[in-house]
Image (tube, rainbow, N blue to C red; front, side, top):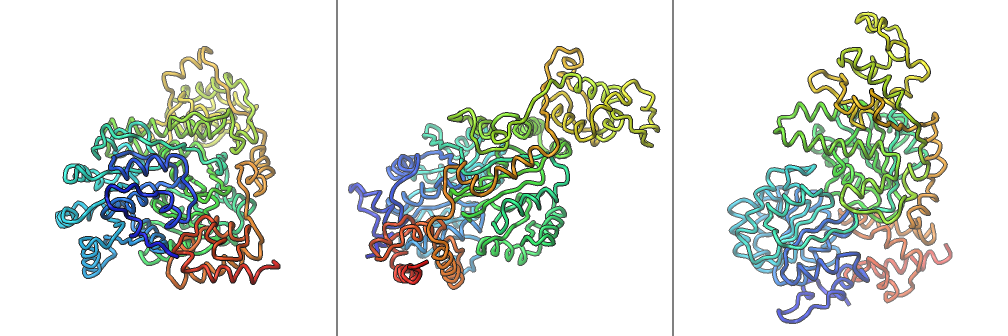
Amino acid sequence: MSVPASAAKRPPGLAPDVLSVLNSVFGLPGFRGEQEKIIGHVTNGGNCLVLMPTGGGKSLCYQLPALLREGCGIVVSPLIALMRDQVAGLLEAGVKAAVLNSTLTFDEAAAVEARLLAGDLDLLYIAPERLLTPRCLNLLGRAKVALFAIDEAHCVSQWGHDFRPEYIGLSVIAERFPDVPRIALTATADDLTRKEIIDRLGLAGAPRFVASFDRPNIRYEIVDKQNAPAQLKAFISERHAGDAGIVYCLSRAKVEDTAAALTKAGIEALPYHAGLDARMRSRNQDRFINEDGIVIVATVAFGMGIDKPDVRFVAHLDLPKSIEAYYQETGRAGRDGKPSSAWMAYGLSDIVQQRRMIEESSGAEAFKRVSIGKLDALVGLAETTNCRRTRLLGYFGEKASTAGCANCDNCLSPPKLRDGKVMAQKLLSCAYRTGQRFGAMHLIDVLVGRLTERVQQFGHDKLSVFGIGRELNEKQWRAALRQLVAMGHLQPDAEAFGALKLTETARGVLKGETEVMLREETPGSRLRASRTRSRRGDLASASGTSGEAGHPALVGALRAWRSEVARKRSVPAYVVLHDATIDGIAASRPMTLHQLRDIAGIGDKKLEHYGDELIALVKANRTA
């Protein structure tokens, strides 16, 4: 009953039945969005650029054409984890796939090369630095290559959020193999990054397929950073207890401290950063991928290429560098389409820290200007009082279909605005009168009339601005100050760490010519709203998706069976069966192999390997 993937290849001249291959190999009934157009274009020999959100089905856009075209599809991938998991999934589906990377011994690599030359591979994943070696280029020149897929293509751009120098050399593909179709794929790229991808990979004139960037199942929430560790523990305990999640921190020390604090609070959390012993790093990553309910606390080095579909939340304890980075990192939640959360704690210190890192970097002035522009756009997203999803989509040039999404904190609990002109004038005057040489805490001390040693040392208690802001508390002034920085009326001074100075636009505020509307929040209002409206049932209804389908006992039995099979085969559980497939089995309760075959995710090979066991499980839990 099984149809080997290699049998899916048709002789030149015959139109392949794309849908039958899709169903036979991958167990999918149809395409999503632009997939069919992309696959048809590449199968017919065309080049293209594909922008598709994480979890949107990018890999199918090159995997299926590789099966439909003569030869082997070459996939350029930057991470070993991505190669390993994708190849494991392809092998489970009966596709002849392999990798060429640094994990292979000389003999293992030689065996893969021999299979490539013999035409015994459908897909071969290669690291960019290996592909660029003369040996590998000569090898590919002797092989029959079906296509080149450059995954994570934003890595080629110096304007991208994850630039990798080795990607620049991939321009050699167009030069050495001009007649082989090239498909560049990424989940995040603004106009500047897209242009550089096209230029460096020789894709001028090739069509761009841009899917919607919307992830309606993800709830976006950005909270004021007060006590970030306590806020994080409350978020996980109240909203995602027992769920798999990723927590991002900027420093290695913060990663370890946060992981330890979560563990102490009874949350199973593991650290991940480049400073850890390689074996521990690998072990922690494998546990996160293979086990349920693990929280990984990591620097941004973690996650690209991680294909785990059931990550229920991504949390940021530090501000990322750009909207692209934020979108890519939050996109690791809810790849299976189920309700998930993107939560971030954010404060003024984040802006100051990121600005300082940009100013102190060794990049050219043009790079610094672009980086600051990207940071400002992210701060604008964090400070917006309107729908966050609309703002996020707008950054990527996509117009939201409605005025609000009903699945972000601002839509669920709209913030109130008030005329903040007088508050702004007091703050700006204070910064000016104190010489534009001090940070937020000192300015607030002066405004509220706090007679600290530092205030007295500089004589700031004698200034006219001393105590003019006693009507507000420290938290309110801090929020106002952060919003003025976000609006661009104040900015961190690159030459004086932590100091805030006025910008040109501040003049209009001080003269009363510029309107300033500030967000007004009652203490704890946003937290209460998120607690009352963000339970799992509400998440499900807001995103238009349902939670776990079918019968709980059968779902549990299927998950336990999957875990055991995954352990024996040394593959992640989702490589055996995705959660959506388990839900489909539990909901329909198939009693025959024919009925099981109709469930999405059950292709011919999986039916052959696991069909009898799955039917037996369903029958054993008939009364569940």
